[in-house]
Length: 76
Image 1 (cartoon, rainbow, N blue to C red):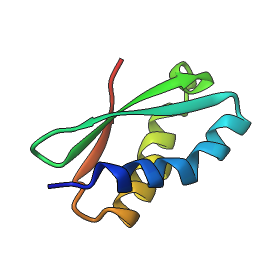
Image 2: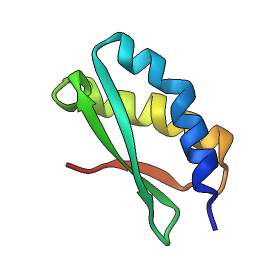
Image 3: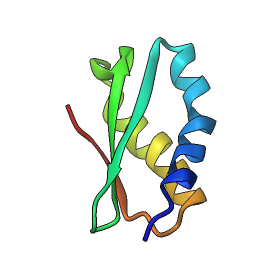
Image 4: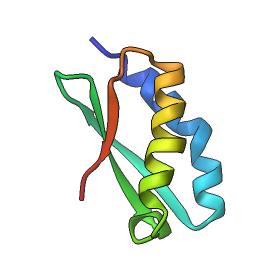
């Protein structure tokens, strides 16, 4: 079972960088396959680099802090 609090802590560390660019990320849930679901908000929801931010920034930080996580996916 993935600790949702640890996922939130990881997101808290990356949020300031997203907010500096007018965006944000909301934790939605973790599914049974170890996939964290998030919702990109503000500028992040329509940014052409959102996919890169999701994988190279958000996903990397979450997996670094919560190794049980397999991946991170954005939902609408």
